Image (tube, rainbow, N blue to C red; front, side):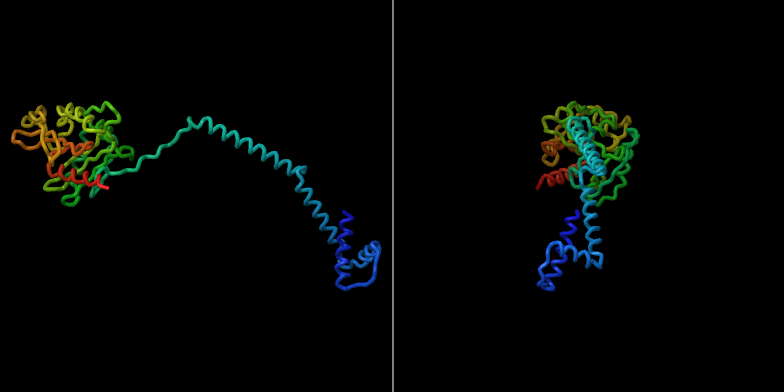
Length: 295
C-alpha cells in the first residue's frame, strides 16, 4: 500500500514538473522527499484515504467476507428449492386441477333478439310457463326471431339438461350423437310461434330415436304449443305422426281431425331438426339455418 502511495505522489509531482518544464535532474529519493515536504493541500492524506477505501471495497467484494458467504448460502438454498418445485410440477402435474375454459357462446342461427331466463329450482310446469310467457310477450320485430336461452347457476343450459328438466321421454343413449348446443325461441310472423332447434351427428343416428319419441312427444311438449289436456284433445296424445314435406324437407307431422298441424319435426338438413307447429316459423328457421352455412 505504501509503495502505491509513493507512486501516486511521484506521478502527481512528475506531471507538475513536466508542466513547468523543469530542467533539474533529481534522484528518486529527492523527488519523494520534496513531494512530501511540499504537500500543503493534504494530497498525501487524500491519496491514503482513497487507498483505504479501495482496500475496504476489495474486502467487501471478497467471497470470503461473512456477508458474502451468507448471501451465497441463501442463494444456494433458494436455487435448491426452485429445483425441487420444478421436479414436483413435472412429476405430479397430472394431479393438479385444471380449470377448463367454457366454450364461447355461439348461436346456431342469427337471432334478432336474445333473452336469458333463469330456471334454478323451477319445476317442469314452471319452466314451461316461463318460456310460454316470454313467447307471448316478446317484442321482437315482425318477421324476426327471438332466441330464448335457459340458465342454471348462471350457466346456459344444454340440450341434455333441457330434456332432463322437462323429464322428457326422449332417450339419448349415446352421448355424442346429439349436440348439446340447441336453440328454443319464437318467430314473430302472423302469430308468435314457438320452436326448438337441435342438431345431431347424422340423420341415420337421430331418425330412429325420433320415431320412438313420437308416442310421447306431444305429452312432453304440449305446454309449449298451446295444446291443453281435455276430453276434446285426448285423442291427439295417441294419434300417429305421418310423413310430410315442409319447405322441401322431410318431416313427420301430427294432424288433428280437421287436418291442422298440431306438432311436427322437420329434418332441415343432415344434422338439424326443427320441432314446431307452424309452417311460417319452420320456414324462417330453415332459411336462417341455410344462411348460417354460407361462408
